[in-house]
Length: 279
Image (cartoon, rainbow, N blue to C red; front, side, top):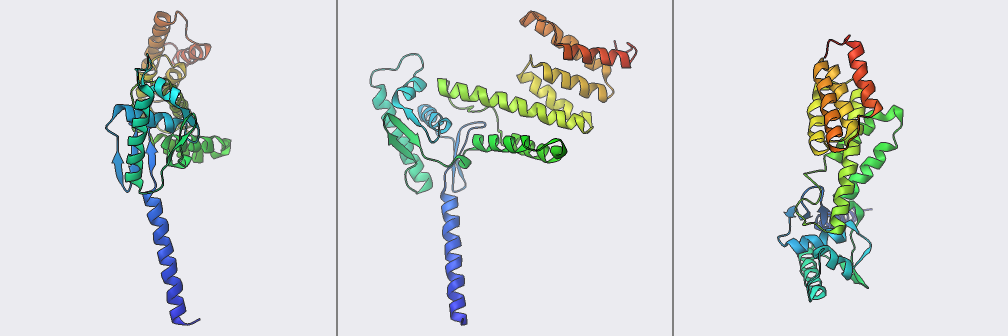
């Protein structure tokens, strides 16, 4: 093989890599672990129209599935669709198609499929899907893989930029997905805290995290139990007992229920260890 042949091979390889890179850069990706965003060519677009955001979010949540025109009407107008609602949906779809085409420069990803529309996008181009994949991978690590699991959980939580679908108006599909993701985020956060506490990391580092989570989940007993553990280990047992009194009063006032046995045990454990001096 002569040097000319080698140059031809190298040139073809470079050209092929350039085409692959160009295609990858042109791919549209979507993020809704926070405000809904459309990303392509290094550009972030939060989409100006409220109704367009609602339509796009419904199609993203059901990616790869057909969302009927009737469902989109219910999403856009939860109380009662106005006259001409189906025509309005078609207009929003047309605008979204133009936006997607302009941003990606590629074939349409928003397809008409009876009785509605389907967003044809790879799941790995959606941040919420990536979040779930990372969490699933973390769960597959056994007791000996807590370090790897912690890394994956932190990567998953790092995808969040605020409340899910923050800039999307309420609707049945949107609200159900936002609530589901919020529950999942809280569950993952409690697992990260459990790992942090079990490996005896500095409790001071995790206390602000737990307090922030409690501000969004004021009746989440597991978070209160974790906060009591962290405060006690940080040498602040008095504050841990104050936290117990706080959740006890909250539950009695808002739910008419006493704290769980687990919280009671945590409280008694602190009292026994401090000989009641923490009171």
